[in-house]
Each structure stands twice: as C-alpha cells, then as structure tokens.
Image (cartoon, rainbow, N blue to C red):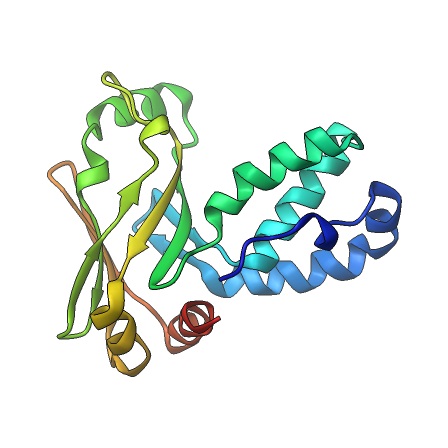
Length: 192
C-alpha cells in the first residue's frame, strides 16, 4: 500500500463537514477487519482508509492545524500502512478490571513471540511487534504489529481456503479462523 500523503488530509473544518459520512464508511471497513482472538485479544487490520480516518480524528481531537504537527501524525500513522507483502494490525489487549489487566500484562510478557497468521498449508507469518512498545516488566495494552508474508505467502494468501490467527503463549493459547469476509478484506489490502 502507498503511504498517506499530506494532500489526502483535509483541514479540520473540511473534515468536520465530511466526518459523518467518512465515519460511517470507515466503521464498516473496520468491522470486517476486526478479529477477536479469544476474549482478550482484538486485532484491527489497518489499511489506508483506517489510517486516514485515525489521522483526521487525532487532528480534530487535538486541534492540529500546524503543518509540522500534521506531518508528525502522518509519520506515526503511516507505519500502520502495510508495505509490499505485509499486513499491519493494531492489537488491543483488553481486560476491563484494572487490577486484572495489570496482572495479565505482566503475565503475558513475551507475547511478541507468540502471534502467528497461518495461511492454509502454505505456511505462517509470525507477527513483528514495534519494539518501541516493549518493556522488560510488562507489555503494553496496545501494540502495532506487522505480518511479513513475503512473496510466497502473499501469492498463497488469496487462494487459501483456511486462514487462522493464533496466539500460542503459554499463558494464553487461542486461535480463530478468519471468516470468508475477513479473508476477502485482507486479500484486498494485500493486493492494493
């Protein structure tokens, strides 16, 4: 996917006019790209539309109008735009109780080595986590990650009859098959 350029970002005033329509459209895009892995892991596979929406929402919430501020947001969020042969996702680790969440975020240390996308019989891609979000005593509740598929898995992905997202951490072992609709959305992202 091509990175988002400054020319694709609207001023806050123009975005405010278009926001209801854009929000409705992007919520539909996000809905099919949101994959729940068990009760506590939610993956949102990102694409250009979700990234543009997030940039616009940040600008709106923070009142960003200066070109330097907008440029910084573009740099941050363009990291979520997948490169060739990649899929990118935001991972949310969700526990509603603060004490339980704190304990689980400590218990799930090393999670970055245990998230896998299995593409039928063709093989699997292990998630690559953003190392800036890792620490030695606990993991963050939000992570940005990339699934580097490479040429072989990218070619196999559209024709795979079964795509599975899996966590094989010793403290959390769960898997989820992607629905046909989810698979089709990610095929579209991979080919754009």
